[in-house]
Image (cartoon, rainbow, N blue to C red; front, side, top):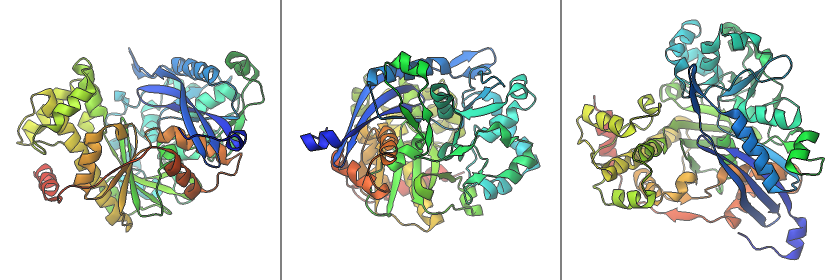
Length: 489
């Protein structure tokens, strides 16, 4: 942590960042001053989806209870902000009551739905209107899958996950823009709803609450929330980049504009920060997405399956020591076998080691058998996917880069960071690990004190947070060969 003198301490403000990931949630407390950016964990809680007869669901009540416990542990704060994963939502009835647990994006209900949507609006037209990549779980396809259901017919309001939690805290409903941009219903040029598209697809945009932007007020904690958390009101809730990737990109410690980023965790989001969307057919064919970020920016990126592949293997193996596993993987011959880390075949949970082995077998590569070999296959494959995404993004956007910033939980995986530098042939700066929570806190701070623009926010991150630089080793010939092998029919 950064040390603080008396004047800095008196100038610093305190913020609670609710940061929900696919496997856990936490409430982090950030202190922000002119030269101060401290972050501590107040409370962490599991996020365990539940399989019920109708499918895979989020346990949203357990998550809300975890948020309340975290705010109680945080103590008195100047503001609260919430970020989470994207695309999923809760439905409310006319009384504001939740209509069932939100559906998990890995639920099978959207299988085959995209093709039905494309029959009404071809995929190329969808991309031209929204700039969003194809992913089977996009909110658009979830709504198409829910058409005709009793829940959707009874719904008066749809709230994305962070907006739902904010509504329970404040009683005020809104739809945060960076997260809304993942629904495939936002026009990235106007930064507003794509009304014509929604009309063609029979989607009622009236279900959504009014749009909010990062920094906008989102209400104050309700009296019952103050009582349960022990806080003294009023405590404002501030709209942040409520898609966790938007918050994470806001905390990338970059200087200038010639950088790429990889937000690592369950997913890897690899791409660029741009001033305008890239809506070309070549961009659609490469499955790049144009999601909205802070201050009129566009997050031009590709979704990669990420450390989910390793997480699922570790779960199936009975949670062996991860450090020992990575050490063993570092000793395995590099690039012996690779898989496409963006393949939807790896989306569902279960049997991940055997599915990876099967993919290698089907592509005519040596089949990894030991845990170390499978782990090395996963990390080589992720580094290769990072390389492909960053190379293609530069070409498609006409935006060259000199450095790659890795933020998020994957920064703790030294082998992955080294392999990514080698694969990209570019230096990698790893850190901060808690980028989403830091971005969340900084947007709250910017709404209340002189933190400054994105450049000043990033400079503060660079001054106060531990970073590690990895230089590329050797040339990228072996990586190019692996890429060609993976692309071969």
